Structure formats: C-alpha cells, structure tokens
Image (cartoon, rainbow, N blue to C red):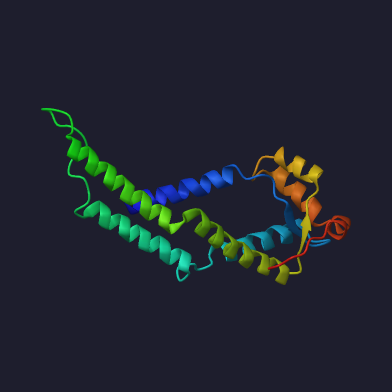
Length: 184
C-alpha cells in the first residue's frame, strides 16, 4: 500500500509539473558568466531538493496516513474477496465490504489533504533555494508576457531554453526594469 501511496504522490506531482505554465519570475545576476550561473543554479537547486522535510508536520501526516492505509489493507476491514468465484458472482455482502473498504481508504487520503501539504512542502523547498540564490547575490525579476511566450515555445530542459533564461538573467537592463521583490 505504501507503494500505491507513493505512486499516487508521484502522479500528483508529475501532473502538476506537466501542466505548469511558464514561470512568472526568475533569478539573475548582472554580468555573471554562463558557467557560474549554471553552477549556482545547480548548487542552490540541490540545497532546496535535499532539504530535510522529515520532521515537518506535513511529512509526519503523510507517514501517519501511510500507516493507516497499511492497517486498513492488512487489517480486519480488508475485503476477503475481490470478485466472484468460479461458482458464481461476488455476493452483495462482499460488494458492500469492498465499497466500505474503498471509502475508508478514500477518507484517509482526503483527511491528509495531500494537495495542501504538497504546496506547503514545495514552498519550503523553494524558499530554501531562493535563500541560497539571494545569498549569492542574485535578485528575482518578473518575466514579461513576451518572455513567457518565448519560454513556452522552448522545450523544458533544452539548451535553447537554458541559454534564453541565462541571457535574460545576466542582462543588467532586464534585472533593473523587471525587478521583483524577493522574499527568500
């Protein structure tokens, strides 16, 4: 059941990522070299990525929900049959038991409020990354509609997209005219 919960978590995150629009903001530092820009992005991104969230209330709620799902799966409320047998269809009692089982699992998942908790965790990781960037002299800037439009046409992870973002992020005029308030 933990694997199912983890798979669900992965699916929710992948769906959110796949449907994400072009970013509203980015980070830059005037005159920085491409090599340093990439190195800083990697190191600060890793700081955010490897932030220990295990002691947060959100992580603890996921662990508790996972244990509850395990208990339901392995406990007395788990259905004894998953359908009919060779001699006939599943009984009404078996169907009712499966419905109660599914409803119990659904309540556990809904009670953990996964979308809200994912947002909170994401904000924590993003804040850690932003704090690192600000500490290295980067500032946040707002992307214009035209810049966002251009980004939508560049494949995520491509060299063209990275180069385009770098050109914006290292341009003093862009950083000055499009400055955004940074709250790391």
